[in-house]
Image (cartoon, rainbow, N blue to C red):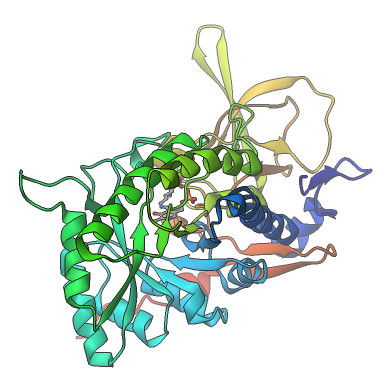
Length: 450
Ligand code: LLP
């Protein structure tokens, strides 16, 4: 069910709060997040996989990939719904800790973690550190010894499964920076992934090797890629068991579960994806003599994306002639690539609706653009909007909850919008306040005085 409806006056509401009221109280543009939707998606993801995989005897844990959207409020919602939190930097880790997330429910990722980040993770007692290189294993083992601690470790492997809709977010190709390959560089050599296992076991007093991790990409709609990746990772688990008589208890299959940005996307229901994955996993488990592992997943976009939207105010409206007889209407809004970089970065499609009123005017093919000094500054490439859209109207762009705030910039010194949360009882409050010009100047220390 959606958080959006229209009230009697024709205004779009978010969990029954009219966006006109939100824009008046909190300004424009604003990100608006539905707490109920965020929590329902977190819960439904966890429950779908629990229900589908329970018959296989598999325990499921879900780590919210906080890179999609992180502040102390949403971290709290994820945890309240029984999820753990996946972080990818010391900053994300610090925010999760500030939200009161217990260390053991946090995972730390990254292909180039610093000693400071690893030390913070150790001191905070994070539940897992996902190591990504042989050098990192050595660094982490040294730090763990210094702290007199044993670090819980997962090894990120590259299963070589191609399962993404866009090359920039495909992370399972062999030729990329993440993970350790399952393929040996030369005959008779161990694969980098096996070398990593050996390195962790050599440092067993400092590192507790808990399992294997993989992440095959993002915005994925089918279960097959996850099934294939699981199979490859389970083969490595077999090899480890044969060579070291050690059964790794945990497998993490990463995130990447897709969402519908526009009507052109037709994602399967999460219960269907989980149900599709179950027989693929069952087959992979059957091929193995080992007890079934604990499984975990790391959805980010699936939970955060549809929970949020952006409310913009329309400014300039212009009609230009594209070619003789062909016109395009440009509808400028008060934000753009600084609050949603995804169209520029990934050619991502969004849609927009006239939100403060309903209009009988005939729809006109429009391009919603931002206010930045770049012609590529597009919010929605092609959308039919009523012909009478004018300055002062509000547009809502849905599904901006993931990777919009987190990729936001101050380009052209635009203050970043705040995040408004609407709670389940229909109360709205700012969970991240809008930036001010004072914020923009806060770190500008000026030229040194002679
Ligand atoms: N786990 C790992 C190890 C990841 O690298 C990622 C995403 C996730 C989980 C969560 O993936 P999700 O479920 O959100 O697809 N900025 C890009 C997406 C980058 C994703 C990077 N890693 C975008 O806006 O599309």
